Amino acid sequence: MTEDVKKQETADASSDKKLKTAVLTIGDQQIELPILYGTEGNPVIDIRALGKHGYFTYDPGFLATASCQSKITFIDGAKGVLLHRGYPIYELAMQTSYMEVCYLLLHKELPNREQLSEFTNQVRRHTMVHEQLSKMFLAYRRDSHPMAIMCGIAGALSAFYHTNININDPKDRESVAIRLIAKMPTLAAMSYKYSIGQPFMYPKNNLSYTGNFLYMMFANPCEEYVVNPVIEKALDRIFILHADHEQNASTSCVRFAGTTGANPFACIAAGIAALWGPAHGGANEACLRMLENIGSIDRIPEFIARAKDPKDPFRLMGFGHRVYKNYDPRAVVMKETCHEVLEELHIQNHPILDVAMELERIALSDPYFIERKLYPNVDFYSGIILNAIGIPTSMFTVIFALARTIGWITNWIEMQEDPSSKIGRPRQLYVGVPKREVPPIYRR
Image (tube, rainbow, N blue to C red; front, side, top):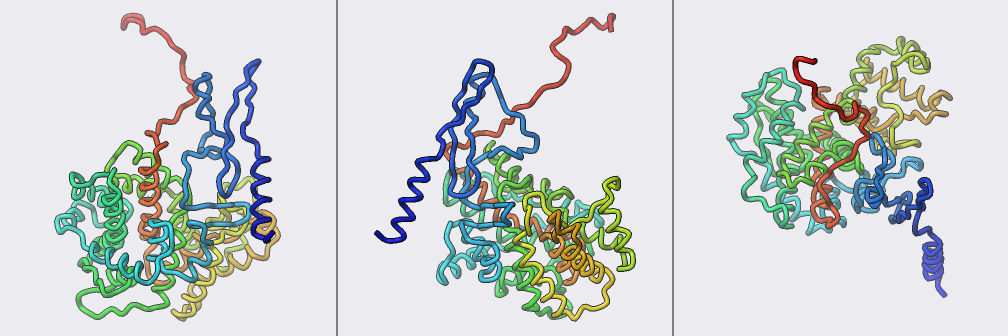
């Protein structure tokens, strides 16, 4: 008997021993609930039958509730694991490109050279946006936050692609995905150019996906712009690391909106709105603002003391993670990339970056941080990189939205293909006034 067969038989035997049901006892009533097992992660108790017995569960924030089944991304926060279609994030970030990861999420497998070339060309053919759409920017104040613009502009795409989209047609769903991947960098760059009063730069499709975005961000009609390959690779890794992250707030928002049959572009706009929150996509922006507030290395002890004081509401942004109770696997890549960028740009004696590097040193050596696993996370390093390459803090969350679009639309597609998907309708625990009669107005 081969070793592989032995392992398979062991796995099958182990599977047979798995509990098939959980029994919930309420008074003298016993309710059997099926236990579901995925390929990775914790078992899940199927509670759908509870409603028939007159009960619902209460789980604010859905911290212990699986809202769907998915084959896209898996996270094990305790072990610091992040997989896309089974591939570890570190290997993807170091060995592939963002275009390859987009293909992987959409098509379930990494592309070969021919498939990658065809996919990349498909995306390139859709990088332009309708000229009428560019006029919409004039409706925004010059000092508008770029995420406010992105919410509106992304939603406006639904007005340009509505009547000809059949969300039940796989080809139309893929077409939507290609358009979104292609147009988000263009819209993101336009939101930046508008805020600084510079003309929009049309895409140059002879450049890579990430190189093209850098060109649209930093080029101008007056002089030639050459993409720095180190910066290009660093930003491409940032895109990869933010491509998807399981059922987070914005992804769940996209899925939730999608269950109604809403236009997919409108669903993505809903995701952008959710991402804008400082507790979600705005974390790296908040981290940079914290570094600016600290200002200089000699003020770090004061802020470290505040972070350790349980009575002080202040907390260090960019350290620890709600999901990862170990080192954020994305931060491993970002740390390497961060130092590559700083070396390439010969950045020395930069007050904000000096503060960041000293905070990193303290967090990796101070027992207080180590014992609580408050390691620098992906937001900490990505914010430093984006700042170093000249992307303003207000654009950080826009970059996040650009990268996360592939995760959003892949989850939207998966939700559309799932026969068990239903319109989202959470229950509530009502704690208001019980039923009462309306008194006549003269008695009130």
